[in-house]
Length: 194
Image (cartoon, rainbow, N blue to C red; front, side):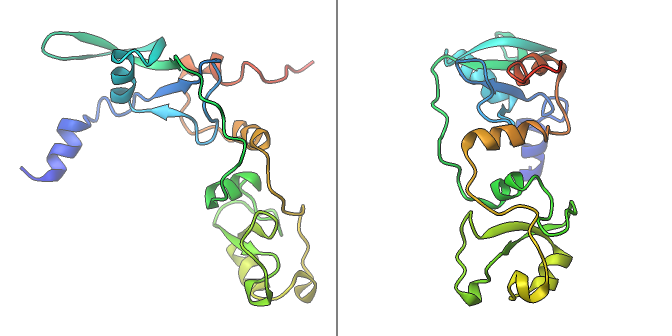
C-alpha cells in the first residue's frame, strides 16, 4: 500500500477530519483567536483520556475502538492554566493580522506581501516598526525608494502590537467554519452593544 492511502484513509478518514475541537484555557478563554486554537479530534480524545482536559461540548458523531465508543469532543478546557505570551512573535502572519489583512498604502485586501518602509538598501531593518503589509502593486511602485520619493503615505505608522491588540484583531477575522457549540466560548467577554 502506498503512503497516500494510509494517510488519507486510515489515519485521517474523510468523515472525521472535519471535527476539530476548540481548545480553551483553564479560564474558559480560547488559547488564541487567530489562528483559532483548535486540535484535531484525535488529540482532543487523547488529552481527555490522559486527564489533561475536560470535555464541555461534543459533536453528535462517535468513534469506536475495539472496546469503547467515544463521542467526539467539540470544546475542551485545559485543566492547567497556560499563561498567554506577552510578546508577539514577529512573523508574516502576525504582521498581516496587525495590519488587518490590508495594504497599509492603499487599503486593498488580498494578494499581500510585506514592505520595508525604509528600504533595507537604505539601512532599514526588518522589525515591527519598519515593515508593513502591502499589496503587490504598491510594493512594486514603491520599490527601494522612500515614501517621500514616490509620494506615498502610510494609513497608520507601523509599531509593535501588544498581545491584547492581536487577540482583539483576531476576533474580527473568524475562520470559515465556526461550530455552533463554540459560540458561547468565543465571544463571551466581548463588549455588548447598547
